[in-house]
Every structure is written in C-alpha cells, then in structure tokens.
Amino acid sequence: MKAFDHRAINDVIHGRVRLAIMAFLRGARQSDFVELREALGLTDGNLATQLRKLEEHGHVRIEKGYLGKRTRMTVWITEAGDAALSTYLDQLKALFPD
Image (cartoon, rainbow, N blue to C red; front, top):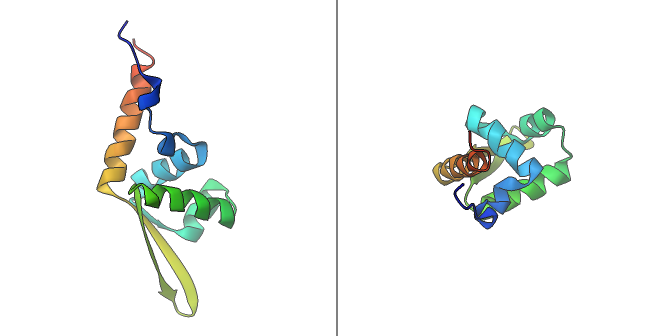
C-alpha cells in the first residue's frame, strides 16, 4: 500500500460546513447568501464566518450589493476553489483503495 500523508488534506475545505458550501457551489456555480443559508440550514453568523474563511483562501468570491433597499451577497466558487475541491476529493479517494 502506498503511504498517504494525511497532512496533505486541505483543512480549509475539510471542515463539515465549508465542505457543504463548496459542494453546493460546485453544483450551483453561484448562490446568494439567503439561498445558501437555507439550503444548508445554517445561521447567518455561521455561514458568514465559514464564507470568510473560504474567501481568505481564494476558494470563493463574494460580491456585496443591493437589490432594491436590501443588501444582497452573491457567492461564487472560484477556479482555484474548484481545483482545490477536486484535489481534496482525490485525496479522500486515495485513503480507500479498491
């Protein structure tokens, strides 16, 4: 069996909520904050905290604006984030050889 370095797993994506965000965005490509919050069943604070961490690492892009008088936040998965998620998934698969 080939040696596997568990330290290579992306800790930013590995968090349960951040992984859920990345998985949702991979399918949707973009989402507004409310849609993402409701789809994942998160609180505003938890989602905002996890998005900030993903944004700091370049995995998502966040744009804030207005829809009428209401603030609106739109979130996109970045190319780097998509690639990091693919790498993460490949690393997990390597843990469970056929």
